[in-house]
Image (cartoon, rainbow, N blue to C red):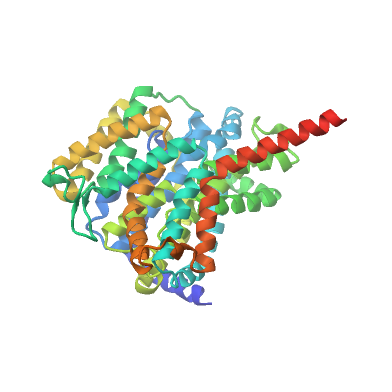
Length: 506
């Protein structure tokens, strides 16, 4: 009941006409970013974050989150019409979306993808509405050991549950920790790794690093690949949309299952991409039409889009309640909160109610608005895709440079951004994940601070991390996550030996 009253209050915050305007601008920019391969939600939010510096925090987060929702919607357009995923999580959408477009049913595929996205986000938003206050209230009892245990669990989850090589994840994370440590030590007041440079006193700004890593790095990679777009045209009319909406209830099991998978993968650091693949695989396995998947099945479009949007939205739950981002985009949004002077975590629900509930209310409205925008503007965005990337890329680079400069009004930041851009490019070429680096850069300071406070309280005893069942279980779970690749390999080896022994005995 409290959650409903707070949500109604949030809709009141959203009633400000300027917030509505920012929401529509954000959705439009997000769809634009989503249809341009090489960019994406995290990149777009990072590049456009400086635009929000002069806005009130509530308006800023509404605009940034709307960019994210728009990017989630936009990724499906290129997947269906051009067979080029605009986002990593849209890859699974191409499996059945593009064959549908080749059959002349592109409008049907897009309407199904957008509607699935809307349903996934709606379920995840309901989860945030009713679960987030409970998690935040519970987290209010946390002290430094509990917070460090949560941070440790997050880092270890990225290592153990990510799809990349654990060694590459650890390497990226260590680089992030090293970069986060540069500058003034806030506890002792000593300088760390500044090498006598006054420019490094303030350390590496998170925003400059993110613009370089995500924005410039992706642009360099995309320019190297020399993308050219040749795709199908599509027109969506109300008759096609209504026809798809009438058909969707047949897939209610797939929708619910995909939303559950997406929410789970969003809250844990699994992310939208594994969620979309997992959901597609489950739909193919359990659907009556499973054998026809890959030839143009509407269900094969709805399943991954529902899961991806549910994961993208539910990733905000741990960010808002615990200060732990569930996805790279959530990490960028978390950085934005810190820049605006807001501390994500349980106290946010107590001290910044207008902000939190205004954001949650905006998710409901922006998903409806996003659905309307994408259903009515598909031909426009498909036409934008036909502009040569050689024209679009310099414009994006200039926006990145302006964004980096405005952080501290320092030209050096543009050079730092370019260096991070090269690092981002090399990471992508060598297959190193960027998300752990960004996570360590954002949370490194906070994790270190919590650890040192816990050590001060316990007078240097590590036993504080097993002082009560909560912190003990969190640390134990974190260690299980850390060594999960080894544990799973050992279990697979043991199972393989068991099977071979059984076969030989027969």
